[in-house]
Length: 268
Ligand SMILES: C[S@@+](CC[C@H](N)C(=O)[O-])C[C@H]1O[C@@H](n2cnc3c(N)ncnc32)[C@H](O)[C@@H]1O
Image (cartoon, rainbow, N blue to C red; front, side, top):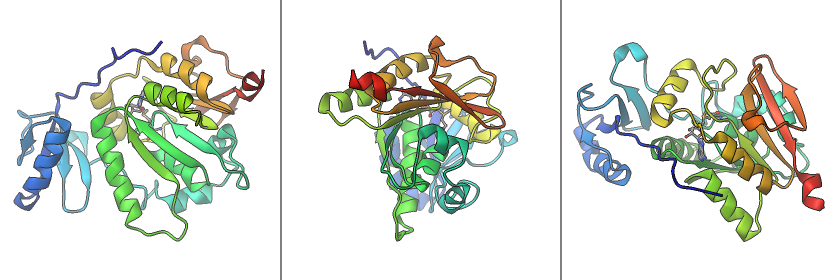
């Protein structure tokens, strides 16, 4: 049974514009996200600033000790799509999801965060729909996708974004009869050594979205909807999510991917 009791409140965030030229765009973001607008990163205003620069949207901290800006980067650096393609289909995430270069695979990433895992899956040929419920995180993802689209790749990645609670979106796909092959989950977890994100990124996400303590309910919907499998990313030693025993697990150094096969269940 779905409910709407989980609210993601983001009272600690304000929209900051880097220069006066960006004020009208900043106002549009502030109105859309119902956040205050400011031109100064004053800690009295907010803990985090969704900052509009000439190039991109960034999440900055009011506390300089917390480090520099966090943003979604699908193009360059460690998260860039070229680097991810190099990782190949033998990497544990690709194996857990069951990607085979030759066969199309539709994936809902129901906990995309800053999109690093979604990018790996799309770079390796998956058709990935990200569903993110935090409006601020979704804004960062949308901005990352905008910069990726500007690359005009010969072979564009199949990577899209929908803002909303994945429990509701998945239930909607089920009603429409367009269930994905795979649902991928990587909910927040207290200690995240194996995360695709850095400690700084994780700390900032946690301030925004909290602990995802309804993740077991999301798993229950995912198992019902996925045509082939659900994959849950956990720290290597963590208990399984919601006491649900997986069909198998795939390990990397710090991470465990619990795989729930659903294809047999769908045939009966
Ligand atoms: C740990 S982060 C995921 C990190 C991600 N795998 C990456 O590579 O960047 C978890 C994210 O899932 C989102 N989330 C959790 N439950 C959700 C739900 N029911 N629907 C949509 N998004 C959800 C949170 O808002 C958060 O942004």
